[in-house]
Image 1 (spheres, rainbow, N blue to C red):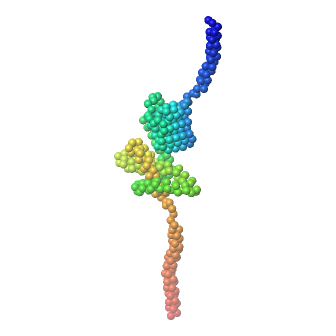
Image 2 (spheres, rainbow, N blue to C red):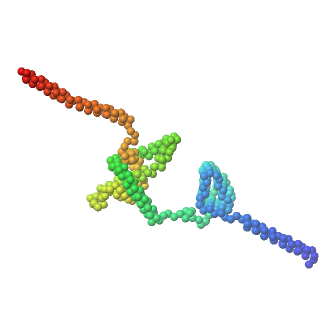
Length: 361
């Protein structure tokens, strides 16, 4: 082998030997700088501000931005929705659900995969077509399972026990008020329903009028907080009425079942109402009726006190003349029996004079 070839072979080996560290360093740098895949389980919701899904991010949920833009560079296993904002789907991104922009624009680059629908009233730029189906093994329900019949029965039973406890406590503390409200339902049920309906209609107007003044704001807050109490009052009064009607219906056939104590009637009524509430097509009427009854009985009977909400203007003026008249009447009555006494005294005086004349004669 000539010297030229030997020299060329040595130079080639030296060049290869020098390239080995460079290739190894490049591989090491690539491995070190490769960003790991970030997986986020759950929804991503921002009320203000923008949302950026980086290429190495994987969102296993929905992405929602209110008053902000959304930039999707990575993968979203769910829907992407922007309210008053724009959506940009970068090349290489993947959205498994729908892409919706309300009061915003959707910009889709080439290579962006969308398995759902793209919806925007403002405008859609880029390629608007359905992507081929993308198969992946991910549970959209986020491992959510509907409760079993036993779990639903347990929830129904626990809520019944809690309502029974509240009913027993309310009847024990306010028996007279609740009985008075129940008697109102017995006397005029339709009238109380109408009053309750009008009360719920007027309630927003009253709250709005109270919030317009600084002094009325705490009162409006207190009324809003007390609204569930009205519904609870309504269902307890309904339970008292239902328990009483149940005793009357079963009194002749099952006399041992009858118990006139209000607390017992209330508990029996709650059980019957809760059973009716479990019926699919009828149960939804329980809470609206309770709300109407609670508002109607509270307004009509002033929470069972049967007192007027506002005192009359002429109540004081009417009582004063009566007080003035009574002494005059008593004085007149005291003067009338005095007349016979004077007459009798005169008669006795005349009798004495006659007897003196007779003696002189």
